[in-house]
Image 1: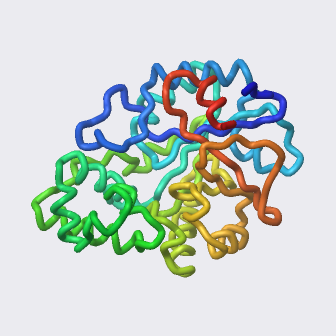
Image 2: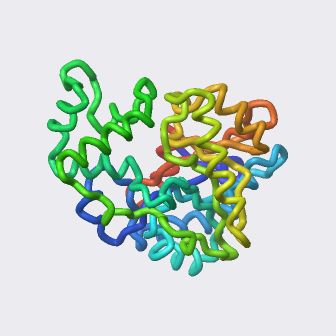
Length: 294
């Protein structure tokens, strides 16, 4: 299927950018090596006008634009992705979880650690979960909206502590404000405080998750802050009407999903833009884009 570059506006969502994935994150991490990232972005720049993602929230925006985002605040983005962005002069928005600045290990990295270290069976026994009663993997089960993410995180932490696993040396996400650079190519966005499945939380807990990172970013001097919120996990089931109401109350102009789709005409909920993203997998960006069209 041919892609009309004048109509579609792709938004990439990347995560880590390690040349080699650390052993404790070896399973389920969306990682793009710096050389592959350079190939991806070089292709996009030849086909589209590269902009910050906030431009896609504009109701009367033109087609033929593309934006780059990175979720979860992996340190490797500053170390390895930023040189690529600088070489190609492409802006990006880094979506962070403010809990990592409290020296907390990203809870999805705890899950990856459990999978990578062969601890799934023991953890499922601790959680009193039978793999025979759920038609999904441990990795997917732990982020399902029917399971309260905050309680899941608490239980996972207790399991790891009880089994003598200290992950404090495995903090791969931003844990110090010095990582939040005042850089002309970088904006920073809200990805919630803890990266929990928002629809698994109460309305009050959702508000706290969104408000805390909003306040955190507002307190960092001299950085550019996006007015578009990135929904953790990014599917329709991962947020609800409470999320939309809160975002509007707090002045956000858009929300980002991650459903392997491209953007055509402007879409939204009232005046809140709904912007699609896709995770590039594989070295050939042309094939990745074609795959997003089905």
